[in-house]
Length: 330
Image: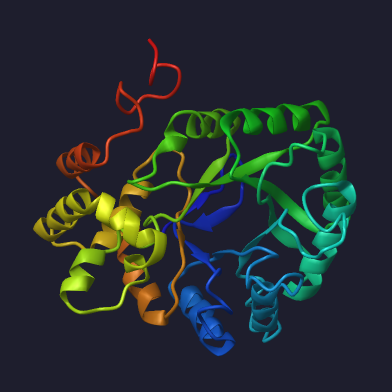
C-alpha cells in the first residue's frame, strides 16, 4: 500500500480510505470487524465514518461498531487514522445538529465515547453550516484541540468559497484550519473540478472523494447484469441514472475490458491520477470486495486511456477540463 500526506499536514494516510457507512445497515458487526482487520493486513490505515452512520437517529451505530473493534486491542487504534464527522441530526431537540459550539462539544464527546478512544485524528464538518459564524466554529474546535480530543480538522460537501472562508477565518486565529475536504467526485460527477479542487490545492487541503464509483454505476454494473449478478445500482434512482447514461457506461466497460482491468479499479485509479486527490473512499460490504479494490492503488493508467476517459466523461464545462472562470469564460 502506498501512503501520502493528508493535504499540507504531516499525517501519513493510505491512498485508499476505508469507508464504513455499510457497517451496521448492510454488514454485521462481526463481518465489519473482519473487514477492518483485513484492511490493516493490506496496509490501509485511513478509516472514515460519521456520527449519523447506521441511520438510527442518536444511536451512532457505525461508530459503536468501530469502537468495539478498537476495544479488542492489538494496536488496532494506534495503527488507525480515524476520521469521523458531525453536523447531521442526532436527536429531535434543538442543538443536536449542525455546528454550534454547544453541539460541537457534545458531538465530539459522544463520538469519543462510542469510538472508545480519547482522541479523533480527523474531525470533519459533514456540511457547511450557514447559520453559525466561523469565529464560533473555530473557537470550539480550538478548545477540542487544546484538550487533546482532536488533532486535525476537515470539511465535507463544501463549495470552493466555503473552503476559502474557513481557511481565512482560521488564519486570523493563527490556527492550522482545514487539512482536508471530502467531496463527491468521480468520472460521472466532476463538478468539483471547477472551484473546489482549485481551492483545496490553494489552501493545502487533501481531497477525499466519496461515491468514487457513482453508487456502483462505474463498478461494472452492465457486466454484472449480463452475468446474472445482483447490483444495488440496478434499482431506484440508480436505475434511472443507469438508463440515462447506458451508452456512456457501456463504452466505459468496453474500454476497461480492452485494457484488461475491472471497471471499479479503473474508476478508483482515475481519481488517484487527479492532482490533489489523497484517497478515494471505498465502502466494501464484504472482505472480498475489499480485496478486489486493492488493485486500484497500484494501477497506472497511461495517457491514451486517460484521454479516452476524458472523452467518455467530459469535464462539466464548455471549455473542457479547466477551472473557473476559464471553464465558462475566458
